[in-house]
Amino acid sequence: MGERETARRRRVAGAAATLLTAGLLAGCAGDTSRNPSDDAASASPSPSPTAPPAATPELDSIAVIGHSGATGFGTNPNDASLNVPANSWATGDNPDVDSIYQRLLVTHPALQGHNINKAANGSQVYEHVDQAAAAMQEDPVPDVVLLQTIDNDLKCDGTDRQNQRPFARDLGDVIRTVMQGSETVQLFIVSQWATVDAYTAAIDEFPNAVALNSGTGPCVTFDPQGRPDPAGRRSLQAIVDMYWRTVEHTCARFDRCFTDHGAMKEMRVTPEDLVADYNHLSVAGHRKFARLAWLALPDAIRDRP
Image (cartoon, rainbow, N blue to C red; front, side, top):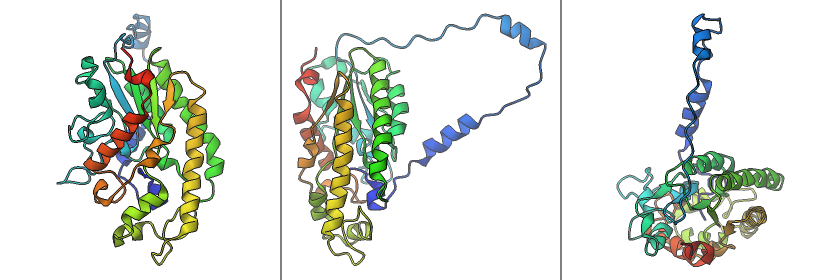
């Protein structure tokens, strides 16, 4: 069911980018006293800003933004702490995955090598705005942007309904940022993989996975003794569905924004589809995800020049 660290009481290490950003923003105010050389400097003409890259008429670039569901996290058999973008369902180039990028490449050869992955582990929807801005500065400019979100925005503390409006506002900012980068770009937003019941059925024979999903609260799927918690499962599914409805309503406000209409809920996940943390997809899982996402991809994207 995607990252869903909050619901499952797990976190993917993603603080490095935040710390780096904080360090850059902190900067140094420096000496504010006036320097005679300032006058000469101010009289010099400012360099012209670099023009943003222009979109091309053909489909020759694709990008993905979002959380660790799109980064190939955990799929390196020798080091489960690494991202492996090549294994991403979205823009990966591992033939064992057969990503959206690879499937579009068959009929759009100009896409070759232009598969951009700006997704970041642990990121929330407001952080996808910067990802979108960075993606739309790439050259060639992405013609298609894929978005995988929601998971890290789950509060699971009784405040998710109050978070619905801020989530919609931030998602709108993400969509606007993508659309402002190109007059022809198309955005495709995917839903959470599997249902809560399907996911818990896949992990219920693994004590470590059950322990990570046990406890009390609106998002647990097993009680403190590790027994199935039907009420918790219904509650978590209702919360996820609420956010997804928000995604669909927000996307519908924009031309060239599409969703998969909840197609990923149909994914039949098995233990082989999960990596060691029981929380992210394996290469086999990414392949299943890519296939379902491809079937849900609108003709407006698949058949564009």
